[in-house]
Length: 346
Image (cartoon, rainbow, N blue to C red; front, side, top):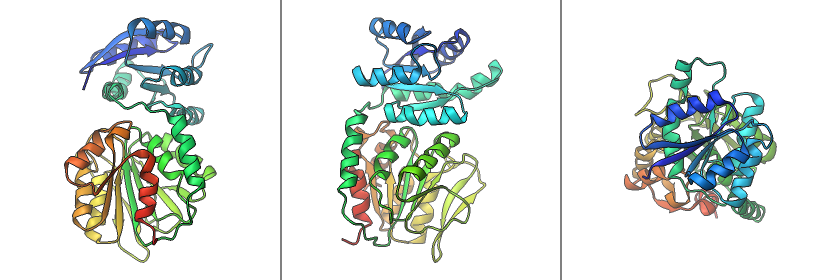
């Protein structure tokens, strides 16, 4: 893992100073410059050669979103967007993911310096991971997956329940997989460790664009065809409960190996239930999901790990592969087809 050389782009001098101070204290992260606007950032990128940007959404002149589109259209590089946790901010975050941002980080509002430092303490780890991430041509991939989804054959479900997990880069990866999901998709539960308000906006967008029903995971929710449940509440785990039909349960428990909701816990409960299932570990940072996927595979379930080379953040799927949990290793461009094939009667 190489050093993150960060250019901080924010129109506020106070925010530039605060973010720079926090990032300079992070291990293997070095702030090489700070820019007040897109013109300033453009000059410093050429001069300082950063390998990651933190980019404020709201800037005078060219906005952060417009500058992100320019970067990804000319010389793609890892960009972590900083946005407020407002309704407009979450919608902008989704647009940033679509354009190619590797992560969107909440910008604290009305915080004291101490609160600010605590809130953005994890930003250093995200920036370091971003500097070592895979930046892909998302526009070409989006066009390809849209064409593939349109050409997909009719789906006949074979009874398998799908469980997926993702963290950093997860919204982009899930957008690719779920774009091919039919209206009568297999029952699906997803552990997505991302900002809950952004996940809520993502679920809302899926509800408007997808043929299936997308919902935030609720306690007691039935796992039936045509519904995708997404769990992201950092205060509660999601587990599988056997029944006709099976259900989801949300539990108030301590984090499992630092994760809540825990993909390992979800996969483990499915493995113990012995139901026909498919487990899928997608892009992310850390190892949550690796042990659980191995439990699923050992129980006889089908399992897939995203090819780390195709993941925005390959650490989690690589851990799943190393743990022996991956029955298949599949690139992002073939993941949707692999998931539906494992759940199809044909």
